[in-house]
Image (cartoon, rainbow, N blue to C red; front, side, top):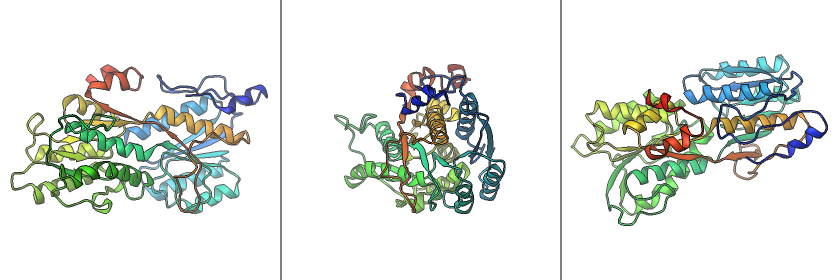
Length: 374
């Protein structure tokens, strides 16, 4: 990742901003930074998802390397708990808040408290909605993530390559596909859904793909709190109501690895077996259990969003605002939270399938081969 304009602060002897590329290791920062012991509050949604643990650890480690004190809290997907945690961070004198919200619409009052205390707020991966008091947003290109999820499904069916280019001599289908969406209270979920639907629509319109259940709306496909058990129950209901005639599901669009594992459980319980008409299943976050599932053939693909890079961007934003500077952003149009367009920095993501696990995940140091094979 290219060096930021923040490097100008080095000449003034203030803070060291070091976060360069994140091609390996858990942190993009260097030692020797001087955060002057300022407190940064970091609010994460839950420890029930492996990725949020990694996010929290990466942000904390990189902030501490810059000399900051860090108050890292997990709310276990309980909204009042997260609000209380953020209030406590404000009371403790946090200089900046980095928040991955549970429900992006429920923080209006506590963010007004932050504003009243001149505390900048950085939304982390999930856009905070309905508040003017969100200063910056660090995330990935979430629409593109949805496109990649759809392309991974289409690739597994032999219809396109991983870049979405049509495959010569592709099968005509029709293929039965069922679709899952993320949590309706997470702004990212609609971006994932829209990207995927725009990509799948031509194949549905052409009859190559068929949503046999008829459940094609976001509201029907949404999975509250991205919960795997909720997804498993919905998949079980779809199999019972739609496929009891002996027809088979050929593909499942899943927006998150935890949801994918719930879908896999439902399929296994219904008598599906890997290698014998097993569906193509997408995912997101490259969680270790799902990477293992890709190795075994249970899950076809996942989308890798490098939490180390995301942590780096959030930390750079924090350093910049505390230096009285404007952080670098690369999107000032697409992330309207209902009150304002939040200046954003969007990172790139990658499709991971069995053939590129080594290159994308192991060679980058995100997972080790022993972890994946273990």
